Amino acid sequence: MAADFVDHPSLFVRRERRDVMDTRELAAVTVASTGAAVAAEHFRTDLDVASKSSQVDPVTEADRRTQRRIVSMIESAFPDDAIVAEEADARKTLPERGTAWIVDPIDGTLNYSRGMSEWVTSVAVVEDGSPVAGINVAPALDERYVATGDSVERDATLLSVSETDDSAGALVASTLRLDTEDHRTFGRIADATIEHLGEFRRIGSAQLTLSLVAGGAFDAAIGFNPDPDPWDTVAGVFQVRQAGGTVTDRRGERWNRDSSGFVASNGRLHEEALAVARETLE
Image (cartoon, rainbow, N blue to C red; front, side, top):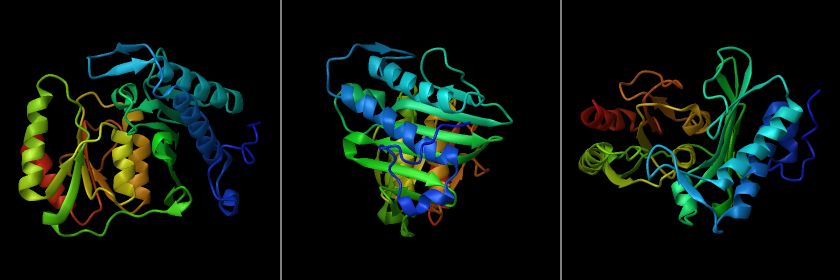
């Protein structure tokens, strides 16, 4: 029997919606919020920072502590569910069948380690490979993005993608990982975006970037990772789709968790964003 999460003090959803959210959806909000609180306790404190794949891909003790707290809560409530998580020796691949949780304790660790506020704790729940909940909590920004059912909310306010259809006025983000030769690709994306679309940003957290597309702050986002990991994208992609947006791979096919890149948009500017991705990532 799953633990009762309905009256957990850190559950940030409107009470009137609780009856339409199942137990795992409620639990996802709780564990993401609790994990984010653990990360926030250590934010802007003196923590050891180590490197994983490169100097721009760090990990901190806060990542590990946050993940341990989240994983322990999930295992206690749902011992038969699979857990896929970023740090340490956690499982790295999603099962094709059954229920699985996807955890990124701190997405945007480089920002976090430098005292910047643009980072989130991310939790998604998938059933037979399809997301049913996607939660991104940004405690340093005091924002919580919750996607369940057929909608997405920020702090109990329903969100939808932007209505921008003027490409010249678009605000576009990139989540490209900046390792070695990727710097040149990043430059090409920036140049092409400014030439064909409008303003360009990179905030250093893929999940937060996708949440901002879902909320209408960004009109589109272009991402590329040759070795895609589900904890970097699944929750945020689910949010964009639930907010009425479009997410494909960089060739225009429906995005899935194994896609090496994505184009997320409000739908109105998707072809323009795809053209930038094709021009710079092929």
